[in-house]
Length: 352
Image (cartoon, rainbow, N blue to C red; front, side, top):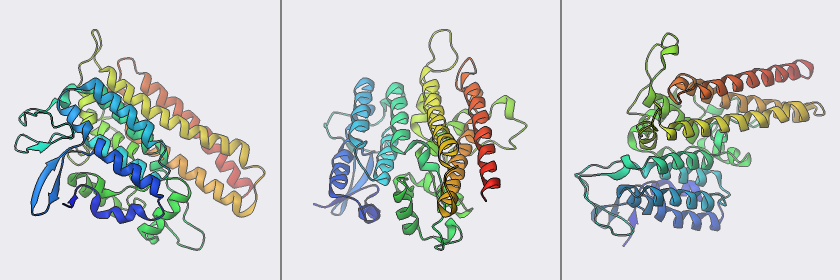
């Protein structure tokens, strides 16, 4: 019988320009990382989950961590950036709690008590899932805009979503697909998209950063800077909640997994700044004309993507570790950011 589930209704958007190898690997991996969602089997609706969801539900933290490692290795060979990002979203959703009223079946067919979920005890694998999801989302690439094609449109808003997706793939950048996320996330993303966010550009890193800020709240040092706390239900991610609520080591106040997640975010920021720094220092001087303009614009977009992440996580930086190392790393990133930006401004001034 034909069975369809989450994300299948817009599969045609993925197939365009994607190799058969990528589509086949996507099909195989979905059996491993499918979240617990309803599937239509003829006239019936049944709930099913993939292997990872089943491991998490049974408190099999070490096995779930190994499954995340396997997924990272397998999905990294997929060439299509949209499929990689989709795999990262599905991975995060494997920790979602569906409630005791739902009866579902997993791949292994293990007996499962629907009134209990073991996801809260899987903090190590949840931390690993966040790392893998950030990597599959292209780190900061998922949040980096691209310059609009010459003579094709004056802005991102003038480009059809299909055209924008095609141009982003040319740069190796993914485009978020709203239907991969739960309904409450979709509503929030569509509201932001209508406010002018490049056809709804949400990378995995940006979503995780927003969820981290929502979970931890604005730190005491920034209470006067931000007028209101970020929304919770529209950006909550179960993996982030589990990592933030894990038991800290003896003598510490913050869970070790939360510090690891913050370190993944910093590594993405640092890598993106390193890329732009290399371009600004080594590539701009010999370029002329249209080539120079394209590289300058792309460097600006990369810096803008980095600034979004830095601006999001700075507000809760004091809450992610006991010694303030993450806040210090963000300060170092800001220093690099302004140095790179100054050189880019000089490049525009010298060769407008």
